[in-house]
Image 1 (cartoon, helix red, strand yellow):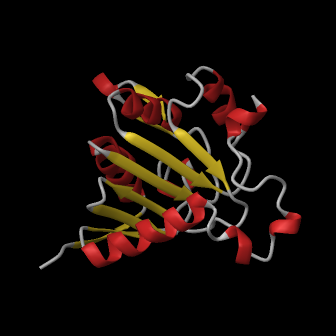
Image 2 (cartoon, rainbow, N blue to C red):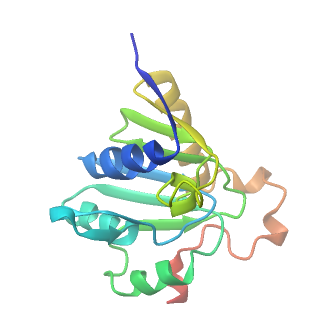
Length: 178
């Protein structure tokens, strides 16, 4: 039987950023609409931003790809300046609105939370959003979400998207503007 774990509140933050993402050995695919320099527990208990985590994973050979819709927050972009260009891959598609993390093609987070402190429940109970999510190892769910990620990432969705004439730069990288 496949496992499905329901998450809400601070459990989202602990499970997705504390356990799931850092455990990636081969690949980490992240899809989110909003992207901020979310802080999380790092090595030795020191807080680190998601930018540093992604760079650290990439440095140890994990293929890291982030698909997002909006321009990342100012603090995220500032931290990105300190990371080697292309250390991990990012693409922006304004139509991206699903929130998911696929780890090693075997585990999946799928939920409503953006990659922000308020979304993932890292903020205090009075400042966090009301979000839900699931973590599962069900191959059918993992593969379905990974296939959607790949379709958007590769640009195969662009010809039939309907927004391309309004898209500022299909599949742009934030390093392009730095």
